[in-house]
Amino acid sequence: MVPAQILDQIPEKCVEGLALALASDADGAVMELQWCNKAFTQITGYEPSEVVGKRGTILIGPNVEQGKHLRIIENLMNWERFSIKVLNNRKNGEQYWQRMSWAPLSDASNGNRWWLCSIARLESSPAELVQSHIPEVTSSDQAVSKKLRETIRRLEKENQRLHALAKSVAQKSVEDPLTGLSNRRHFEVELTTWIANLNKKGAAFSVFYIDLDRFKSVNDTLGHDAGDKVLVCVANMLRRLTEPSDLVARLGGDEFVVLKLLGNSALKISSIADEIVQEMKEPFTFEGKLTWCSASVGVAIANAGMEYPEQVVADADAALYHAKSQGKGRWSFFTEEMHNESVAIKQLSSDLLVACEKRQFIPFFQPVIDAVTGSISCAEVLVRWAHATRGILPPDAFLDTATNIGILKKIDEIVFGYLHEALAYFDATGVDLPRVAVNISAGRLADPSFIHDIKSSHINPERLIVEILESVYLERMGDVVRWALDELDDLGVTVAIDDFGTGHASVQGLLKIRPAILKIDRQFIQPIVKDNNSRALVSSIVGIGKSLGMKIVAEGVETEEHARRVKKIGCDYLQGFYFGKPMCADDLRDKLIATGGKFWSPMTARPRRLGRLANEHR
Image 1: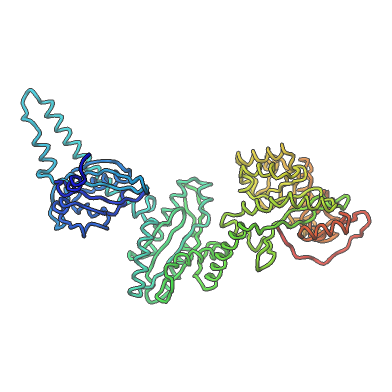
Image 2: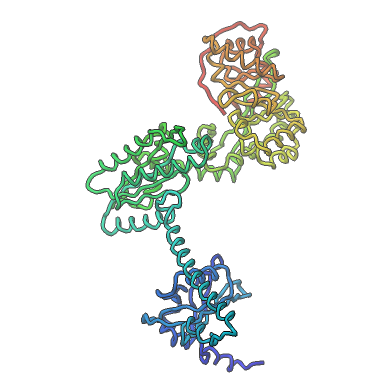
């Protein structure tokens, strides 16, 4: 066993410079030097106090070729053991040739990863070293000489390639490859600089957040080549409308951003925003075909009075959202009202996440009535949020935000989880509720676990109706959805199409889905009392459904006259405020007990007009 006192002398007696660096687990090229020996100081000129705590980049001088620098970075990133000869610099700038070797180490006690770097000074350049090993060429060894010359030429060619690669990498690191604008990474770096100048010098600036309104349609109809051309045209337009001192960037997809100094007046800012919107209203030509792609713009100002100027991009994005909500193809300045709305949405998003954790979403029930008997046929399950301080909230208060933050599927799961308990509750009280109908979002239907949840819920499948939004099913008919529909059919679950007529209705779509029930949206039902055209349209929809063997539900029945009209047209089931608003389980139970489950007497009642009720959906 080697004595400890001998081992302790090795670092100081070693003629090669040694350094130890603690590395990042995620990226081997990111490290912090922790130790160096005496020879390291003699070779590089750096004292230990100047090395410890510094990044590994201190080991790479300004004269290291970019190609070799990139090769070092790549090897470090991949945790490779390697050795390389480079022209480097001492602390004082003096150039010298060195052999730099790297070996990865690991600490089994805590999992930390380290690099051991050794540096040896070379008295000659690598080229000189090669030359010193070239034997005198004679007529008998021409092949050896030729091979050496080819090797040198190959090395020179590789060095040129690495130089070109380094230049390309440097350019790509800041430039969007399609448009030549700054990319997101460069924009974020520049934004930091602009904010620093604002804080130091009061240099106020504006942010334009630009989004193309119909870009997906261009890609879908004319192809991605046309979409790329549109993006390039937009980039050229933004260059033309801005100044060299402005920063124009493409953040990705069809999103662009411009940073512009405010100057003495905001008038120039509004003029540019208006020009962008107006120019984007002009058509684009691709292979002889015209296409349109308008733009919405959000504008925000960062000035010295702001508490958090870092929020300026988010402010511009909020203004962009407002412009889109007002009809697109326009621009909006960020206002205090938008700020308050943004804060409210963030708070709502946070509350919704908490509500999911605490399962605060509960089912409400709206009766669906048999048009022939007047008795309850089923109840549609509609979600409500039992908010801790605001009480019971309708879907309009939270569903859009829930969709935007991606928790709609979770809400579906929570409400569905209550159904077995709810049905057991109705059965225990002796009332007759034959079936329940649940609305299913696209994400929930496409989730393979949905079928598993039905099977494990202990709900009798024959008492379950799954309602799919018509605007969803025609757009999402993929293999997963087709499989889910087939599984529902095998289980005995009834499939219905909800809000028929509001999306992209087609007989072909109905044939694909093969639903048992077709629900006609309320916007077609409500005008039929006075409008002959509406009655004719509803009759046509009923005829289509009946010809395909479907039962028809009329939504939005608000008066007895509505009920009699749609019954006469041929609707099998009726749903609307005339028979009851969505209600909690206790209220539905009480109503079923009071009425014996019979909500209407179609054979004895006389047509009469009731006060018109406000519409409520889900």
